[in-house]
Length: 126
Picture 1 (cartoon, rainbow, N blue to C red):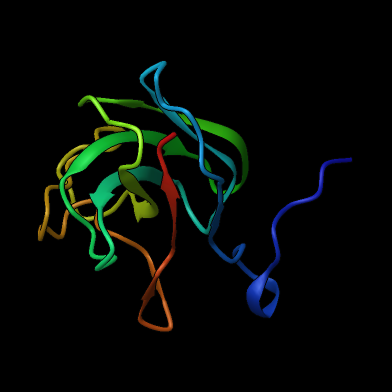
Picture 2 (picture 1 turned 90 degrees about the vertical axis):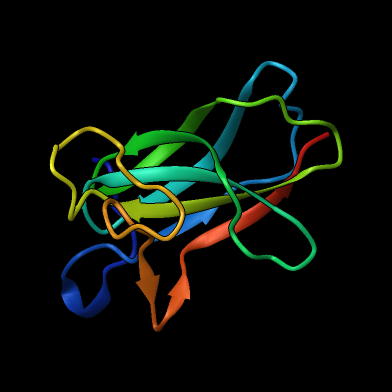
């Protein structure tokens, strides 16, 4: 039997992202575990010490529930020491299902928020 993520009020799983600092020399950044309340995306943003999401540099699809060992192919070269924000985004508001449509500030396939906080973690490329 496979267990699913923590459930809020007995309904959808509570979204979360678990990842650690890692080498991205292979062009991929991974999360150990991502829990999604609905189908969506693990989106990789550049970030820095200010912890604001920057440009998108990778993404991977998510299924509702637990997603283990999620790997996002990076679309730009990332240097050792750079910070990456791994964030859960929805599959909502766009014109096409299954196509990642988000750009910074857009509403299509935008970030998930719980209590007005982004569902994300930050890792440093090694």
